[in-house]
Image 1 (spheres, chains in turn blue, green, purple, red):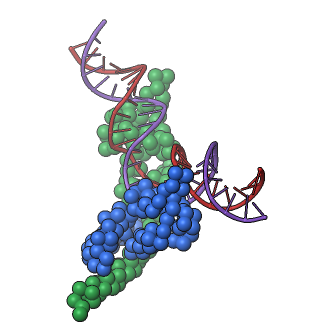
Image 2 (image 1 turned 30 degrees about the vertical axis):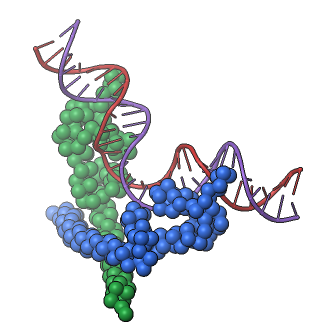
Length: 126
Length: 126
DNA sequence: ACTTTTATTAACGTTAACGTTAATTTTTGC
DNA sequence: GCAAAAATTAACGTTAACGTTAATAAAAGT
């Protein structure tokens, strides 16, 4: 199949597929002299795996480091272990973000209270 | 004073001052035929107020909507009320972000558990 | 007068993941 | 054998707030 059909099957746009190719994430199985990209089921499966990993929240950069492991190891075990690592890192980062935001929330409240007081003092004074 | 001194006094770079000018946030008090920007204490005060509002977490866009109010109203009351509004919006947005991140955290944990189980099943099977 | 410092505008770079033209070529339907 | 659909590469646009050259001009110091 060509790029349009692959795109439709995978629920992405041709632009996305070419972009992934530019990142070395997804190569066409064949490129005739005409210049058209031709794909097989294997590339569709690969693209669907990319989508699945994106769903898990991995960046394309993380995906490119994880994806080769799925090919080395047909059971996908090595790949899954690596995905697990990435997800655990994400969990930690998420916790840090939540903590930082919570901290920021307190500062916001403090500032709100301070400015509110400042207004109260001046609007209802002698 | 010229741009370099103003920058130093306010703890920013000349580039920042020119950038603010391009946004209409801070105009020089005088511009001779030579092309140099000249500033007075008034502009320094304005720049310091910009910095203070940035410290509160306002974006430059928000600052440009808030700053004029400080000039209309010498007591700064109108400006402070507006800042209060902005901060309360920020508080709400922060709460939403925290909630979304917390939700994301649960999904992450669920995915981690699922993949972990997947690994356990296959690595220690018959 | 000459050197050093400071200023000027212009314009690209930074992040992620593509979207959106535009100009050209190939395949396909009839 | 031709028109319409689909593909090609190239290149700019998107966000925020500047950082970083580069080439040039003016000011200040001696």
